[in-house]
Length: 233
Ligand SMILES: Nc1ncnc2c1ncn2[C@@H]1O[C@H](COP(=O)(O)OP(=O)(O)OP(=O)(O)O)[C@@H](O)[C@H]1O
Ligand SMILES: [Mg+2]
Image 1: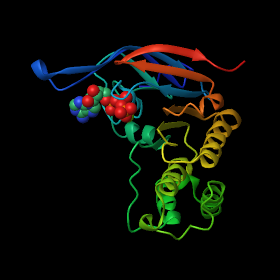
Image 2: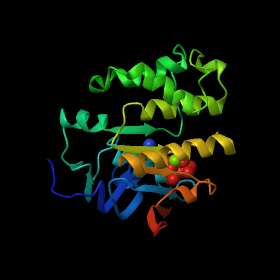
Image 3: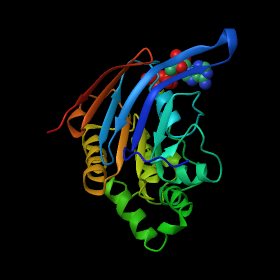
Image 4: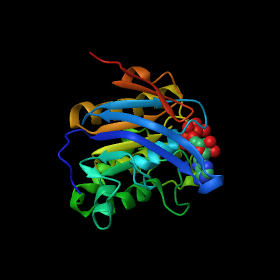
């Protein structure tokens, strides 16, 4: 079902529990959050506060258990195949644990993500090369994960999430393994996507070096939205 909202993300009264009945553990409580298209939001909060759970709900990797969860005009409470797959194709997901296929080179990893989006084919090889070069991996296109450092692998995973030009980027601690220089590059790339191409970015981080790139700072504590501050203007 498509809704009339023009927000990129609209969440209201969202609860979430793991497990059922007496073993159920509620980890999200009454989340309220709205992001405009092109907004760059950073989410922080202590370990276990529910950040990854919230991101996985927005990314339709988990089913909501009620409350309002509208993303890119889709009601995720009712979204079914094939619209669900169509919705996921509009996302760029950078996971907390960036799993790369061991057999694929950096170039091939990114290419595989591009192949899932045939509408973006054509100039794809040039785009992959440019993106990996922008991320400092221009000399490492043909390296496999075991030949790359942790931070280099993380940057391949970032390229993989961005190559198809998603409408919404969901990033879970994408700079955790990066040094200052590379953190700056990745943040610059995400800010450029948000502010020049209208990509909405929701990024989890504990890294206070990156806050100045964002428009919003959201803090989650014990599964509740503790603060939501607008940084720009
Ligand atoms: N699959 C699961 N089954 C049961 N409980 C889970 C599951 N995944 C997460 N939890 C619990 O939900 C709570 C929130 O976890 P979540 O991964 O969302 O936290 P987080 O804020 O991302 O933490 P971190 O900063 O350490 O990544 C934690 O208490 C965790 O133990
Ligand atoms: Mg997490």
